Image (cartoon, rainbow, N blue to C red):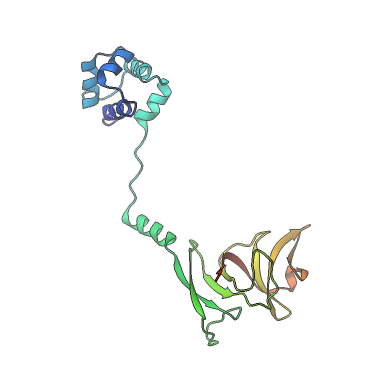
Length: 206
């Protein structure tokens, strides 16, 4: 049980009780309570458990939960650093040509800082005025962030190529078929090229 007396002391202090008051409530002597809190007893007997629960005005089960609660495991340095890495925004270059292909000489126009996904592969694009999209969720001038490793599901916003033109739409599963729909209508998923899920939208108001 470790030093369960320390937990009794913490519980007493949390309830703004001194040892004398706990003694009066529980029927245990003040000296007995003092020895418990000093750690003189290796375990708690059923009789003491019942009296302490009565003194704290809680059930014996609630008292046991306090006494036997395990301390949280301390995270090692690697776990702490990994959590910090995941919550730290990352810089992603913004392109105006979709899709970005390495080696084509396409240059980014700016950078955007976004939250990273745990296993993500992120790219970002500025939505041009002529791109058919889904107002008001995604508008021209917005920056869309796509994650190549994100699993697609119905209701996701996506950027895709149709008739050699980049567009933005919503993935819909209708009667066992998948469609993409936007302001221009609806098209079957099989007719789509280069489909990527939009995981974040960065909107600039200036």
